[in-house]
Length: 104
Image (cartoon, rainbow, N blue to C red):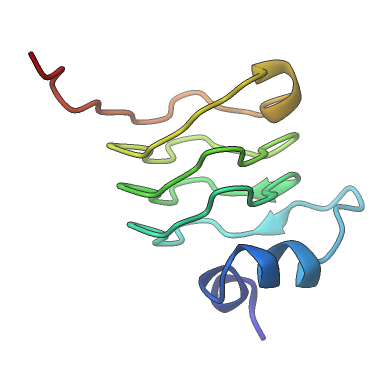
């Protein structure tokens, strides 16, 4: 099973079945992961360059050592309790983010 299909099988399947990061980035460049519930997913060591995670749920997701250049996080729901843990050594510039207008 390829990596993209493994992610789309759900967080548990991804976290248990993904190859361990051994110094080579896991290729998910340009992947469309829009609208998925990826809460708790471990994307450490993944290359998500140009990927789209628009409208995805990313609470507790980890991106340690990930490449996030030009990754689209527009309208994604993310709760990062400790950026030092979740984004350590991540390459995040330039990433795209758009936040919904604040409700009054």
